Length: 204
Image (cartoon, rainbow, N blue to C red; front, side, top):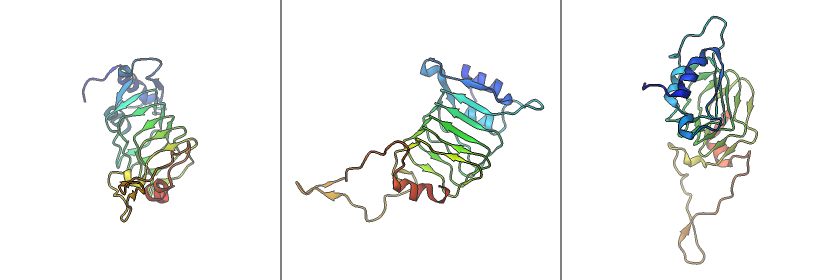
């Protein structure tokens, strides 16, 4: 891993005691950047050791998270509490065992948490997902909060899904050419039904 930037160093120092870091505060976007690989290293146990009695946690506000946060099959006993963060790529959490996950007011290209076991809560209030929210076969033992969460994706927008067979464009009555059916804009707090049925699956 390359040398840590200013925000990453602050996060690295306080992670073991669960203190919060605000990467925003009016700082330029470049100064609020945090690499996903740094977050993964902390969450997967490569960070500094916690002192006796301390409660590690990832508490981060206003960060621009670059790269892909890959936590697949990981065992993460610490809470993940992100507020007003923006992700460049959709986090991958498939098959991970986690404690609490709270992404409040965050912007993501999607989130894949299929087959994830969350022993605590899953909160995504006011978050905006431009791709699918995948919770197929996920087990959430605590509460979950999707209030005012916006998911603007169709089921076949997921990379490993294909457009359903037999779905064709409607021909235009005016010129006979095929055109897409107009789609309604999703209202805040509502995911399109195709995403809920086919992507989110039984985990919802």
